Length: 218
Image (cartoon, rainbow, N blue to C red):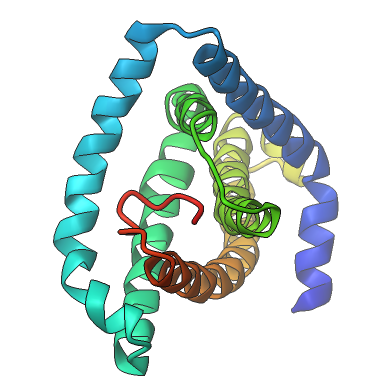
């Protein structure tokens, strides 16, 4: 299994490089937007964040005290919820739109721009807090790239079956779905680790006096 995954990643390396570069550029554009002080765009993103935070509060607010107290059942349950939400997000916002290739500009790249604006406002009480926050984020964000590669690979296999080494579009798509299965093993592994990491980080934020919604460095 590991050798097959490595082989797939190696074969799709240019897709990984291109999509990663575009994603990083979109995050950079978001940071520039924040630091340039463009009030219209920043206010737009802040309103989006407010709506997202309300949804997060509805799901996780009731676990705030039990997670702060270190209740193992609550930590495990929250980790499973985070894992489920992030996995579903990768499928619906990463892979499925990217099959049509062009929507990736609205999902991954727009999402990166929004992330950049949000990142421009973070403040941390220590370097270790900021490092752990960014590490936690990078684990999740890396799966956005992988899930987008999965979708684009399927879309390109329909358009250009020869890139899969076959003439038939049907066979090319079957091979692309095989690639998707392998890459989603990586996504699931990363998100499982990231979910536990995030909930433990949230507990640290709560212990340091933060509310954890929105999640920011302590």
